[in-house]
Amino acid sequence: MAHRIAVTTTKGGDARAESFLRSLKKVFPESLLVKVVTVATYVVDASLSESELKIAAERLTHPLIEEGSTAVLAPAAYDYAIEIGYLPGVTDNVGKTARETIEDALGRTFAEDQHVYSSLFIFLTGVGSREEAEHMARELHNPLIQRASVWGADTREFPIVVPRVELLEHL
Image (cartoon, rainbow, N blue to C red):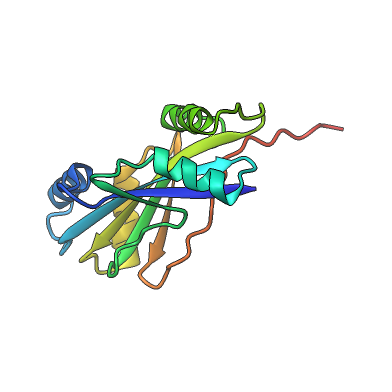
């Protein structure tokens, strides 16, 4: 079963969000974009108990400046959300490091078919249309190695995407 751990900056400012805001304003100067919030997520494709999931979330979260959760920590108000993650089969070094961190925290090694995948949610405020958000998503990801999904402000539960490689046997 896949689980999600989400981590967002709560103190000291979000440098990554500020960088995205500056970049998007340069590429889309006509946009009314005024705010960007980022949430790093880790999809744990392994069997974990609730207590193990809590330990994993705590280990992946800096307690002084971040908040961790098992649900995406969407801001109270936003216009569109973009999730960027790797396509199946692409090396995810952040995911591999998160897996090692979780294994160390739990004191056990995951099975060969159990993985951790990273992705990033980018919440946009001031974006006027889905089309504009989709243009921004295309600017923010590399379609050769990444996928991007766009959701509107009414979305509060985001599907968990597991970019697992599925090999089919030819008959």
